[in-house]
Image: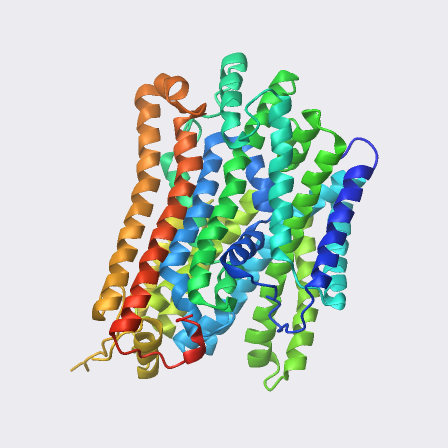
Length: 509
Length: 114
């Protein structure tokens, strides 16, 4: 990967940033953790928003998105619209209501609403599948950065990155640190936007608001070098754009670790306003990400470097490499690396904790060891955490796409399974266990249908691409859920009463 | 002969003034959400198909090509605005329903009324 020696200054900045995070966590140390692992301080709506944003920001947002803009121009805007628009769906259709169920994990919700241990187990397995896929994207980001920092090849970098990540989680856990999410968001936003301002200034554009300043770079790229980077649908169709965009939206409203934020907030009104602040904080990053893509194309053109000469790995690292190519000092590149590592580590930790909670709380005591104590469940969660990390590491050795594409696959699975289960579970009272089980299984098949049947029936690859299957998939799953529910007995009276009184706050007839 | 199914409220059959109002505002927000996403893309697509030169060179906002500004800058801002409007409505609705009607909440610790 790297062509020189160890990047000492950037490495020191990365280490320093993690030290700051751990020390800050020690100051906020609180011993009220549950086995779910979603602890942290909530200070008002802005604090909740910072928590939502720092929980959301991952290697896909920090590194992968800019890489997609670099490679695909306007097509990558479907990620931006999808990952922000999904929060509207989440807020108005799901966030307010799921808190009233009083559950802690997505499988817990499914098991309670549909009164079925089978549905709960399937939801738990799906949550784990989503976790593993999404973590592969994060581990790829970690590995690429470790490869660059230590100047080692990709495969050893995956192993070293995994070791560093597990060590970080273990050390944080042993010291009892609580995540300081406001500080973490501050680090993310600073390390993403500050280098962009320096880069835009160095290139002679409007640097105070680089979110607009990059417009001149698009013009220069086109007029001086004939690169039509901004043309909307030059290489892709309108359907492909919408399919990816809506898949990201449905997936956002169905990602277990995103939903988990809303079970734990202290008040629903604060949680709702926290979404607004969180969306604003997320948008600050997404308003800036296209700039890295176009500036990379421009600098390459100025230096006569062939487009995408380094392949997908280099494209995923474009945020760091453009800073280097643009002549920024190593400490600024180090800031970017620190931000990227922080985003990937925190997203991976949150995801793996969600996955291990699904195992220890929803599968272990129900299927493996009935009557398990709380202590047993905590041990099971820790063991499964390590097992998941090992599985993800092995899968990351040979990733099947770029960071954003791998993440998009996880969103597609969530959009085809968890999202319809929650949406109909809240808003269509007739949905029952048979319906949700049939729906989630159909959603899983749809998510991988292009892999299973794409070579035999090419239309399936067109309609249900691996990264974008939920535009048609999620409505299909809902149709299956409705049909299967009508063909079987309605939910019990207690669920009907719960939905009426507790969830929708309606008077009885 | 099939037995009558119990009637529970849902998105298509809201019950009570409060839930009907909530569903109405959700429909309005989702309409604004959907129309903006689809409308901006269709606008960009039609401009590209019919007037690509005009689109790429002349239609800019703060130097940004119009499609980048609409989708990349304005849409996220629009989503934030929609969420804020929804919250304002929900806050007002919560106060009104607290004042005007009997509450059916069984769990007082749910945090709903904080």
